[in-house]
Image (cartoon, rainbow, N blue to C red; front, side, top):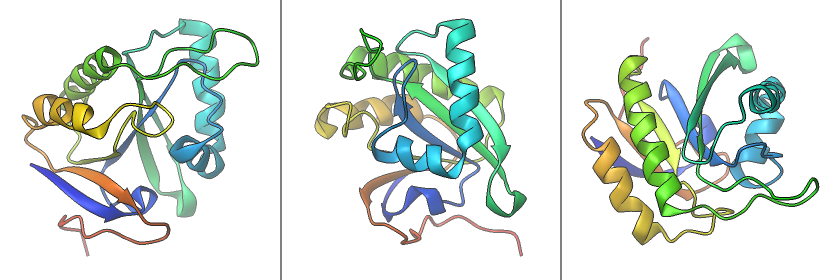
Length: 170
């Protein structure tokens, strides 16, 4: 089930959050910057992972850690953009091919990890530069078959909790 909502993805009650980056990304803009500020250890771990494994665009890396109030956090990092060419240059653009491969890998990992729900923004459409009309069908194709809630944050509204329609434990 895919549901589009308006709100702040960082307030999501899904089991995991998904966002798009580039291999060796600096997490210096958009949602990645917000994630870096909230979870500095994710950024440190990501850079270490990239230096050791040299991931390619089109792959996915999962991070788990503790968030605010010692809550357990799971974040899937989709490598939708091309890696930066020079030392101080910015990552390259996202490509539909990278998004397709990353979403296919994400669907496999979500099933394998037995994730109960995920939230993602309009991946690869901000800094990545892709058009949502081209990315949305790929999300439907690869994540629509998951038997879990897939919450797409189609419009960002800071500090607003979206109605995800998820049941929460009391």
